[in-house]
Length: 297
Image 1 (tube, rainbow, N blue to C red):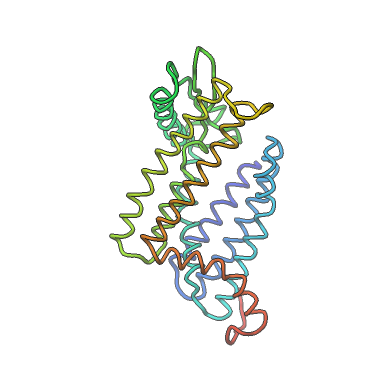
Image 2: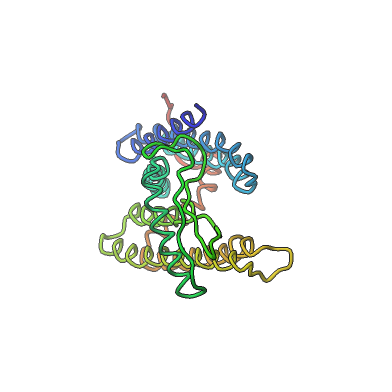
């Protein structure tokens, strides 16, 4: 029942973003205000799950996300009040809607998650055998009680990675790079750049994300299997997953963001506009943003 409530909040909020992206006039702003509020409550209610699995940093982010979404909802209220179309807010709404629908459909339908997990596991194992070690194989694919076409619990679907007859690591959906992929694609799509530039950007960034992610998984497999670490008291898995993997991921993100700035100047202006939302709120509260009108929902 709790999972059903979460998914109801999630998909109603995404539906609101969809209405907010494709409708006109006042409805677009009102729908997105509701969407941000519901999306914030979704993450707030998801927080106990992170506490249950002792993953405290995501728990903190999930618990405080509602503050950020309330801030964005207030910016939509400003747009409604002033009848002002803010391009960065339009960009964010399209990004959340597109990336959210694709990611959560895959996450909520176990057979889709399992297909992607198996594909990435097999290629990560191939990289591990090619560059680091021999004899790494894939193990069993586990749904952990979830039906094929609908998620029924919070358990992570995973595929085993085997070495020397032992389970080394488990690859889950978060290890597939799908989050970075869908965010990258819809961040590009949400810009106002030409189709040619959009295709060029996606064609350059998506292969890099996929290959780097598979290589990151291969490093985690190697370090975990051999317990390789630079620091005493830190296991090979912790070293590879929490240090090396994070460095690789954030370095790749930084480089690809610079590349996107170069190919899509419009993307740069959208990001700068997001950073200026705080100034926008301040100007509105100080009465420097033009005439206001009465709002009715």
